[in-house]
Image (tube, rainbow, N blue to C red; front, side, top):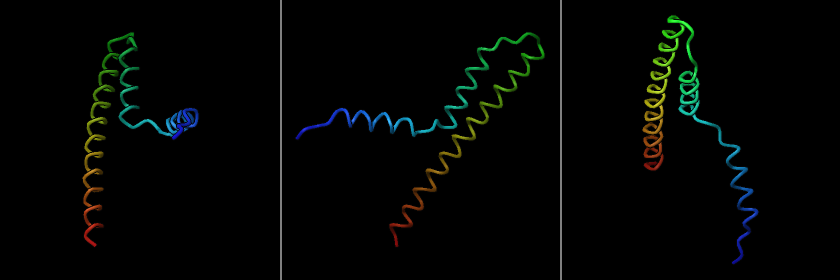
Length: 83
């Protein structure tokens, strides 16, 4: 059996480009950007601190939503199997 590595690589690369980053990845990216910015005043420092806290809360809420969606998908699957 012959394996076409070119086709396999092409499918892999094309499949990766279709996948969109998750909300968590976006939040992590914004947190990194905020951490790299150097505030020029105490006011800006407080604003960045509040922004970081909000992003941490968004990350936590997103994790809870993902867990809930996973649980609900499992429940739907169980209900569908019971029919």
